[in-house]
Image 1: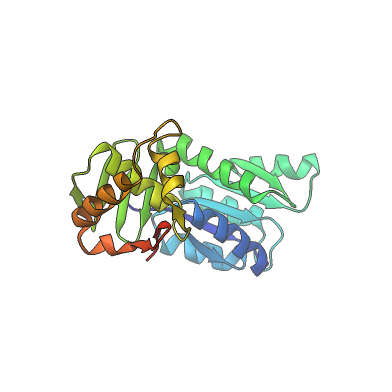
Image 2 (image 1 turned 90 degrees about the vertical axis):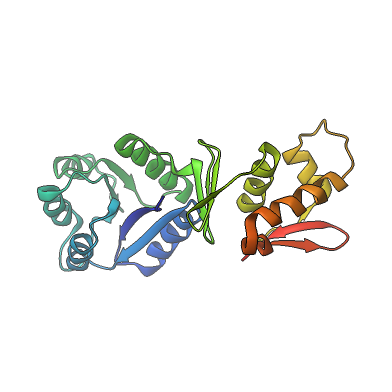
Length: 224
């Protein structure tokens, strides 16, 4: 399953980076454009763009005009960003065909939540339920794991363990913390249970099993 591709259009590079960082962490693929004309070129050269985040005040072509041009050919969800907060600007955005309207400054977490909601509504697909990292695809809804597009068979706990590792990639995790989060707080079993599960999980993952690093005397860390 491919990642949902989002086009972020803003003439401020810092703003594009901020949005890119947050969306990328939430499993979106982000491509960028720095002005209205570039936005049009990028949009029509990438037929699989699923959502557009569009700043209003930009050189060459403003956001209103870009929105109008995209709407001539596509129903892709569009979120408009603006420093203005006047009602007539918001109304103009909706008249151009925008789906959402967010005034700057805004919380990146709120923007990400709006993107999630629009994607669910438009495509009946929940990005948060799919994780795709380093050739490993985890579908949390279907309880399926694919490695390089090949499905692998995991037990329930192996699936939960891998999901926990991936969702906390780059973070050193103690055995106690893993027990608390994967086996729940009321689990009082031997921590060596984790080592046994990790050994089996690594074997089933093949070469990708090397992503689960051992931190001697502490626990594990997922990184690639």
